[in-house]
Length: 170
Image (cartoon, rainbow, N blue to C red; front, side):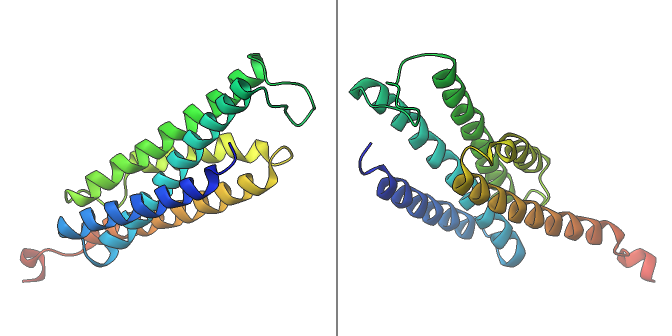
C-alpha cells in the first residue's frame, strides 16, 4: 500500500496520546505513569504495525503485486505465515494495552501479562533477523526496553513488600 507508513505513525502518536491522557486522568503519576505510558506506546506500536502489515499483504495480493522473489502474491503457506505473524504480534500488543488498563486502575506496575507478551514477541521476532533486519531490530529494542520497564515495576513491588509496616517499626 503506497502511503501506509504515515498512517501507522499517526495512529501510534494518536493512540499514545489517548492512552497517556487516560493514565493521567485515572491518577497515574511518576513511575506508574511512566511504566504505563511505555507499555501503551509498545502495545500500540505492535498493534498498529502488525495490522498495517496484514492490510499491506492483502492489498498486494488483491492488486496483483509481486513479492521479493518476483512471484505474484497468491494465497499459499507463505501468505498464511505472514498473516499468522501479524495476528500473533497484534495479540501481544493488545495484551500490553490490557496491562495498561490494569496499571491505570491501580494494579501493580509489574504485570505478568505484559511480561508474557514481551517474551512471546521476542521469541517470534528474533528468528526473523536474517529476513527483515530493520523491523526485527526495532521490535527487539522496544521489547528489551519493555522488559526493563517491567523490571523496574517488579523492583518497586518487591520494595513495597519488604518495607516495614508501622507496627514493626514501633
